Amino acid sequence: MNYIGASPVDTIRGYLVSGRGAVGAFESGETWNGATGIISSNAAADLAHVGIGYAENSAIPAGSYSTFMGQTVGASTILIRYTRIGDANLDGIVDGNDAGTLGGSFNAAGFGQWYYGDFDYDGTVTGDDAGAQSGLFNPSALPL
Ligand SMILES: [Ca+2]
Ligand SMILES: [Ca+2]
Image (tube, rainbow, N blue to C red; front, side, top):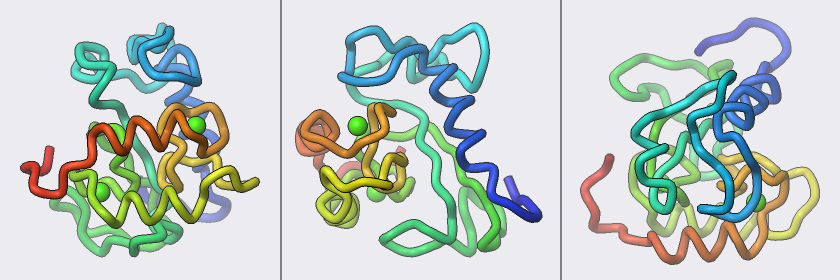
């Protein structure tokens, strides 16, 4: 979604946390089927491998998009998509770009966003996020 003025990224993240249903370690309470917020039946059916990610387009460490999922997007855009856990930049693949992003955010304050590597939505990029990403690392996979 394009926006004007202040970024709604924290609001969008809040909707995703509500839809996910829990934060923290994977397969330990999240549902992606919350009563409120942004939900996904596909993510709900495969909690170990997929989720809904989001990004502030202008802040993606691996580079921002001019076209995303077939739509022209600008700098003031929040991107959201169903994708593999570990796909920080939302291209549908978990590869070296995503691993580099996570490495740059690891245990650092102020990087509690999916597009920095916080895939379990607990607000910090930690070993849980890194473990999930390394387990799903597959640069040759077909993009979701
Ligand atoms: Ca990626
Ligand atoms: Ca985390």
